[in-house]
Image (tube, rainbow, N blue to C red; front, side):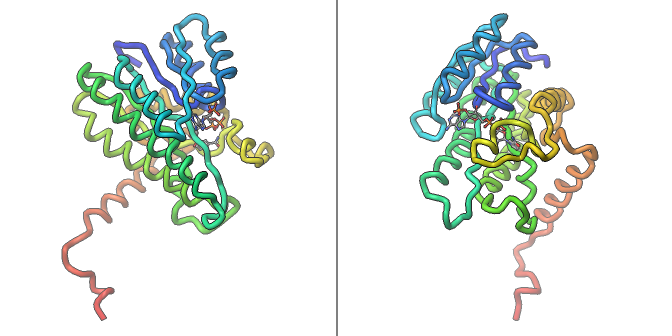
Length: 261
Ligand SMILES: NC(=O)c1ccc[n+]([C@@H]2O[C@H](COP(=O)([O-])OP(=O)(O)OC[C@H]3O[C@@H](n4cnc5c(N)ncnc54)[C@H](OP(=O)(O)O)[C@@H]3O)[C@@H](O)[C@H]2O)c1
């Protein structure tokens, strides 16, 4: 990683993938701003990473106020890397999911990710450098999948698809200014993510957060916009994006024949 500045902000750094990002970035010499709600966990992390400067920010990204507080930091600090990682899944049947939980999910995964990138990008453009990693997930490609063992995931899947498409478009838009944007797509990773929802997936094969983060940081060096560390055949992803573009370019203003009675 060749960024001139060495300051990274990581959301959701109190456990799992975010904590692994903080540890690997700290080991690479990055000063850090670590964000989450559990102060004790963030303080522990800061104490552990004593070779770099770590600022702990306790903020709830499920609220406009919490997002605003972190966005202000993104706008005012010379960030070289923003890692939008915080997330919840709230798997539940669409009709049963309370509106408050749906709102929290949309705030943490969509509003926070979008507005923190929006706050950080102008400074990165002005400094002609920086990177943004947005943590999405392989489920972002699962929209057409028949309902399997993960029912109740429609909103979560939608938030991941938002992150993937936004990151692809942003990478195009900001690339000219030397900014790299990555949508990181984990499959199943061994963290507290499912456990916190009362799901025990420990019997399933899961990637470690450490491997996932190593893949993401290497993917950034490789210039991958969509980084899927668990996908061996990267041509599978290229095929998705070629098909997306073909469908996009296949449109015309004429009503397609199948809709004419
Ligand atoms: N684990 C997987 O299998 C998997 C697969 C695909 C994608 N992902 C994505 O990976 C990301 C990280 O998840 P993980 O697996 O590392 O799970 P995790 O161990 O549960 O970590 C989630 C992190 O997000 C933070 N967070 C959640 N709600 C927040 C809020 N309202 N405000 C601020 N921070 C909040 C949590 O911190 P506090 O509780 O301290 O606030 C925690 O640090 C998520 O965005 C998830 O969508 C995970």
